[in-house]
Image (cartoon, rainbow, N blue to C red):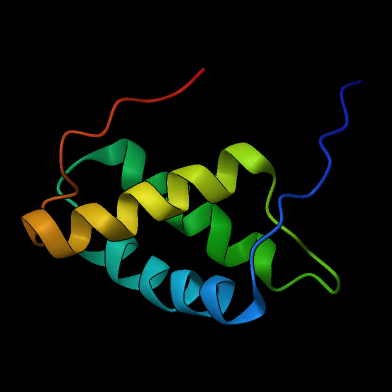
Length: 80
């Protein structure tokens, strides 16, 4: 099993990113960003949850796309 160390994000940045996840989940026209945002919203309710480095990076990209492209979810490539 692989364990990821939590990514570092200032609390205010993480709070801002989490604030926009429900909007991305609701308004995205693409399935992948919608599912990812819904998953992050669920995970964030856990006590002590911190996003992995990969999750944090994707959250930043999706929120950035939200402001650049609107609510379409952009053409974000999935990192694997």
